[in-house]
Length: 316
Image 1: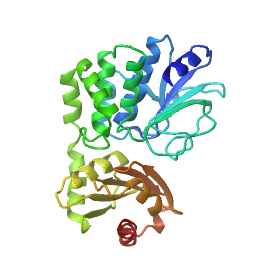
Image 2 (image 1 turned 30 degrees about the vertical axis):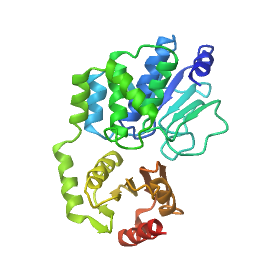
Image 3 (image 1 turned 90 degrees about the vertical axis):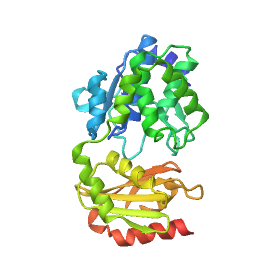
């Protein structure tokens, strides 16, 4: 797809934007940056945008130290004729704002319905990270990956596959091998190792104190603002327990409840459990091994009832 997309973009005279989902994580930022650098090699200028908030201190540090130019959409005056490439998300997803402009391409690795009104679509749900898909484009175009781009893409890949342990495909392994040869190892190690802040520790204390379990299923409701990215990190932490195969974490944020599932049981599909758990009260999706979601009205949320519902869904 990438060759056809580049050929199309070379004929465009409109502004080109690369859009991540609204609360970008390292894989989303890395994918957008990697694609931006590949397009630049082909003489195509594109700006990276998002409509939301970057929630993690470690991610902001990566963006700052590696001079990644990613901006909120409000910093640009966009027009209906502008072209938009969505990475690590899909058109009509709840966490991808429908911006002014024409969505010309979608590049993603999450399970979902392919949009039928987008010209170029590359959705590979069996791939662990969107960064791996972008890396495959460099390989296909026979372009050497610049050191900074390789470092960022390697970080995105490592983060989204939980240190190459989650949903890893042959493409991910190939990408890791190629990126590792080109990346700045010291910067990569620093970004991977330094992922938490002192303030994050209170959420670990909260989860440890309030964790509920039923067999190999763990559940926790955090009655405090805890962003989606940190919820995933906490879920991975609980999943590292020998006795636990599935984690369901919920957090009280503003007027909504954010959700993060983590799973290492081959008999369970986290994305399907998520869809059924939030049916009629919210939205969500993801992969077999991890999923995210949201409940729109927190007043209707009852933690104990939700835990029972999840147990029932998984036990079928």
